[in-house]
Length: 198
Image (cartoon, rainbow, N blue to C red):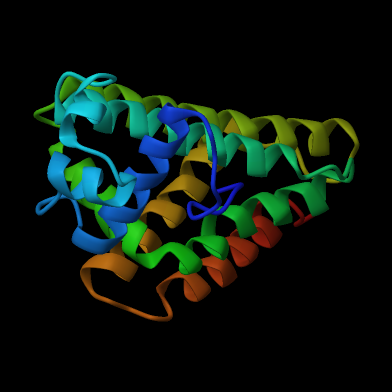
């Protein structure tokens, strides 16, 4: 996330999103209630219901919030070198999440609800499409610059996302401390083998 969820802010929606972040990290999705979010927010449940009718409305907005924060952090990558840019993007996907283990657990719990909640499913699909778009764009740029070999960029982007998703799942479900580190190394090996191999 671009800003600390503990920094004071004046926008009520931002405050509610940060309170939701903290409550999810503390309690997980299964034990999340509007009351627990209100406790983190420091106001009544009525103050939250003024902005969001239901918990599902709030969590759909929270997924949008997380995606927007992710977009902000990715756009901080200012390098024009495609190989370096791809490297930094993979770091964002596989290294930085270690700092948000509790949130990874909550997000995985929310992902498990996606088959039953269209609003969650839509947001996770949008997130996946956006990340694959970023991967395709940097790979296409690398091909144009002659840094990467000519490949099916959609296939490579999906393969990299499979590595990312698999690692995040293993890190949460199996509590594997090394899952993200292993995946980051695997992603490098894949990039070297598929994109840099003459």
